[in-house]
Image (cartoon, rainbow, N blue to C red; front, side, top):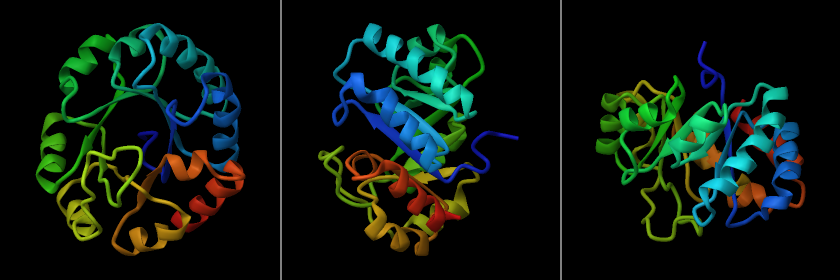
Length: 207
C-alpha cells in the first residue's frame, strides 16, 4: 500500500518561515499533530545545508513512519534515504528526478491547471499538488485558480491530489466542500500558535 493512500494533511517545512536550527522541533510538532507527509523546502539554501538538515529530519520522521519529501533536489535523495522528491513545472522531469535519485522514490509534481494535472499523471507522478487554490504569500507569482476545478480534477486524475495554496483552518471547509480529500498547509501551519493543535484540527476536518 502506498504511504500516500491514507495521507490527508501534508505539511511543508519552508525555510523561508523557519530557521534551520528550529526545523527539528517544528517537524516533531507536525508529527505529533498528525501531519501525514512532511516536505523540506529551502529555495535559498545550499545543497550541502539541505543534505545535512534532511538527514537530521529523516531520523525523526522515520520513527513515526512519516514520509519525508525534499523539494526540487533529487541529489539530496541520492545521499539521504528520504522517501521522495517534489518537483515543479520548471524543474527536472519525473523520469530524470528518479534517475538522479538512483533508487525508487516517490515523486510529486506541482500543477496549476487541469491540463498540467493530467500531464503529471501521464508523466508518472506518484501524487500531485493542485493550486494555488487561494492567493498565497508563499507563491506570490502564481494567480489563484480557485475552487471550481477541484471536483473535476478528482474525476479526471486517479493519483492522490493535494490541494495547496493559502489553505488554512478558516477556509478548509470550503475546500473540502469543493471536493478536496487532501490538502497542503505551509504558512498557516508554521505560524500557528500551536502547530500540534492546528494540525489536529485540520486532520479532524479531513477525516
